[in-house]
Length: 321
Image 1: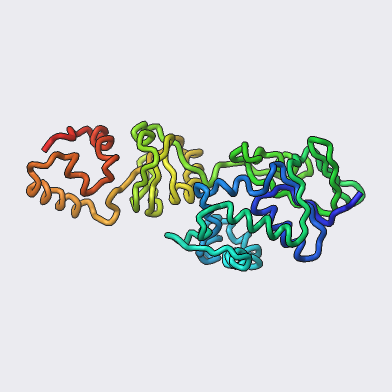
Image 2: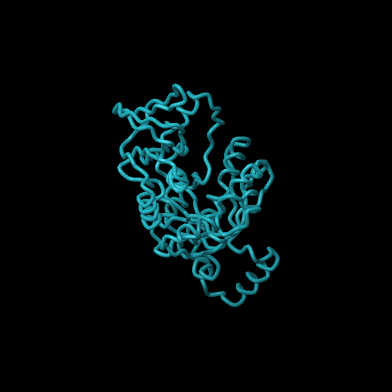
């Protein structure tokens, strides 16, 4: 039976890049993927557009990981966000930068990113076994033996587990890798959501699904305290809120929920205006537009679709002059 130098379990971005790099260094590599194709979850990112990295400095990257961010210093110094961008450019995929340094393929299609990975894996002759769901992994005489749910056996000197977390189970992220890691003696820390949208109880939000509130101020409230979030776009969904700021800050927000229970989300539609300046502007406008209804006047300040729900929550008669 052929013994590979390295068996990589999981055909997501991490698994593909690990397999590619090992092959570049002359190793015989096999990539085990439980789906019929690689990058299943990658195809979903950023609504199919694939926000593949950010142009921020390594210092900012480490800060995003909190107190333990320095742990990643060596990894980022060996392969940084700029190295990643160069990797795709070298393989004929042009990239573009959007607000706050987010980087997307110029095609705006995640398939373009997956195609590059497939082509490079093929270029370096990485064998890919599709529809391979790992059932058991054990080590005997310095050789790892991996068996699938269909009893397909693979042997290798080294194994890289790159099975991801426990999100979007239909893509294959069901936690199998974590279970196997525990059986091998590794410690798995408590799992918490990160990079996720948030649910809201307010149904008027649900009815405005698909609406984006652009460049609003956001803050989280609990127990009489308020914590400011970065300013940015807020996407309303059929279950709650999403958008770059929410996704970026969701790990911290989930931590607060664990300590304080349900939270309040405050939206400032005019973050560039102080309250007293906005009040003066409203008073001035009310003198000028005495015949306008409130709902028509508020089109100056708010997205049209949000006006009635907001007035209903205050409550103010939308038809009032």
